[in-house]
Image (tube, rainbow, N blue to C red; front, top):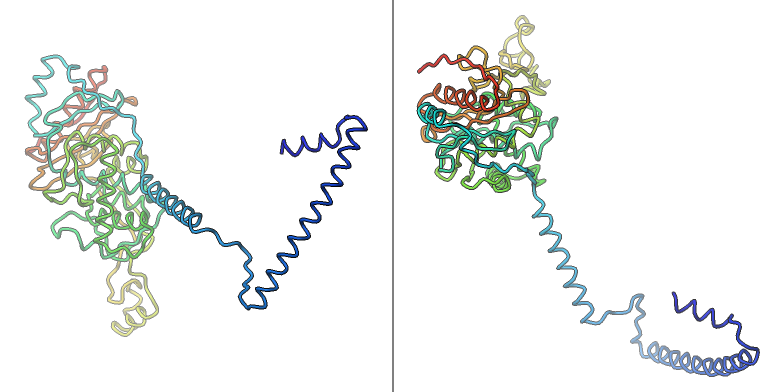
Length: 427
């Protein structure tokens, strides 16, 4: 554009009349030559076209054909761009941002307190972590391999919360038949419809393995944007997401294969890793809100047994007109399907009449299998200061609560805070 402007400046410059006259003559002369050349070119082109038409080989093209080299370069460039786009999409995935360092600060307690804790804490794997100060205050075999049992569901909650929203409606499917027959359930049935928030309660309070599988399958399908993904494929995808989350959260000794924690030799963790997962779970309001509930009651969106005209006709035929008014229309056989569900939390620390209750306890998840032993990942908060106690492979059901309470009691004393709790220790 600058060159074009210079040319215009030359034409309208303040040069002498003589220079203008000479330039004018030269322009006329050059113009005549140019006209003659253009005429020759037109004649040649016209002759070529005429010859091509007569010979029947002229094929008009709207866009000139690119050379093979140019085409190849463009093709490779496009492929490279598409590959970069795919890599970018894969690398984005789901992000778990955390600034926690989990610094070790095991010398905060004096020798007397340390001795007391070593005597009180008999569970095999234990970590006390001050979330507010971002410091590990007590560690017993915290980096050694252990089995998480149902404390796994904290990770299931974390991952699913990144994919599903609070009011996402989830329909229970046949994935609930994938669970171990002897595992704990929330009493879900095929066809039931619950929101994601309700499903979190179903998984985290009564420790429903049926809810864990339903969440995992629906999360994986939503993540892959594929409603046709089989149950088996969905569980595999979800397990991959769990392991990616663990890596991002800084877990060094964990590997997950299922959303519920039923024993699998290849499904393992450490007390330190579980503490990291619990700390992140606390940052998700929807998950934390479920963890701290002692009881929940919900009205189902659908109980999975909605009546149809055919059902009503069948009920009339089978029981007669006199009895039909006493039947619930949801069931052609006469028994009633409830439209409400309710669950109690398995965590005794937050149940007022449990004997292990503390008003400061606010979560998080229990677990048990023969291989994992009895476990609890717990948290407590006083005046905005939070401590997490992870107790794995305890000797008895109540021992884990006794130890968690003792850790909280000692931990909060560092800050002159009085952690009060019940301790009706029962074997």
